[in-house]
Amino acid sequence: MRRRWDAARVAVVLMAILVAGAARAEVEEPTPRSDLAIPDAARPGPGFDVESATQAYLATLGDADRARSDAYFEGGYWLPLVGLLYDLAVVALLLELGISRRLRDLGERAVRWRFVQSTIYGAALVVVAAVLELPLAFWVGFVREHAYGLSNLTAGAWAVVQVKGLGASLVLAPPAVAVVHAVVRRRAGRWWIPATATAMVFLVIGLVITPVFLAPVFNDYRPLRPGPVRDAIVSMVRANGIDAEDVYWFDASKQTKRISANVSGALGTTRISLNDNLLREASLPEIEAVVGHELGHDVLHHIGKMVLQLALLMAAGFAVSQHVYARLLRWRGLRWGLRDGGDIAGLPLVALLISAWFVVMTPALNTIVRTAESEADLFGLNAAREPHAFASVAVKLASYRKLAPTALEEAIFYDHPSGVPRVRMAMTWFREHPDAGAGGTRASPP
Image (cartoon, rainbow, N blue to C red):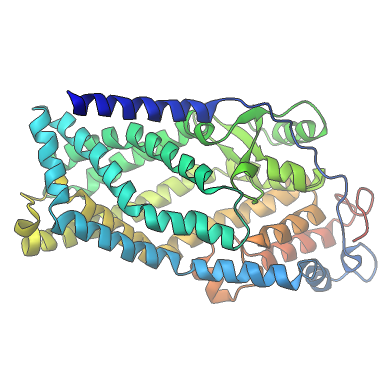
């Protein structure tokens, strides 16, 4: 009885935190800056040169800021490998110490219905894995972000975010685990095909529910008030035939210093969201440039295309994982207490194998995303017609993304184009449209 009461209290606390995350504090909408600085070498004229203009924009980032950005991004090259090795240690603990097996047995002792057994296992695994992963999560998400001046979170606020994430995971992950396990159990000999299909269904569901139900747990979303910013965005939306006039802003500054915007959702939940850092630190032309890029993803159907491409990568990953898992099961299955290929206690090992697959596939996955981002860049230039604003934003993004990597670095580690090709694209576009955008009329000197 005492254990049931403790579990109930934990559930109540989690729900209270989730509700608090959705509570609406009185926060005033930020006002965009009124100026857009254009370097002299980038201004229109008979002597305009794309490369000189590009270098002039790159030079607006100070040496100290550039060095810090380079160090931060280059350090991130190792994070996927570090994360994979850490996950390997976690999975070793779960299997070698029999933790995963005991969690499975816990579910089997609690109820007789297999689906509920799998759900209980999934919930228990989410909690145990969150605790074991906490040291790495704290170093990556708090210590490292503060070391480079990118986070606004206190330790307490960071902990609240983690608890909210855990609460969301406890709501969504256990049923998903149970469904996938039911599919795998029926096709234990060749589970990679139905597992891929099931995973992609959950991915699409996630795209639909995230902007409406998940994002507001972590940030306060408010409709953008009528005015020049909203008018400019809605005008672009209508001009490009997009069925999404819901425009929101959210309080990302309580967590990060990054600027961002997104077009999120699917199947009727599509909405445009701008973070308050963007509204506060960018001018109206820069906001238009950013939103134009984001609209490009919708018009060019990037979400659907990338879901299909990801499905192919995931199918291959599941197939390889099934093959390797079968071999490891024969080698170590009895030691780990795994009964067969469909035993849910083997889930941590399958997850590790999938993670390893995507680490190996990092260049392929990044190329898929980077190609879509480059297409959206060009769309945004044509939609917003703000080449100088686009170039300025590309430099601003260098606060956490190396501005000028080598070709090899960009091919392997970048899921967005780096700053140099983005600025050069904007200046090439401007050469062909010298009267477009700020061009001097709405801009201040550097």
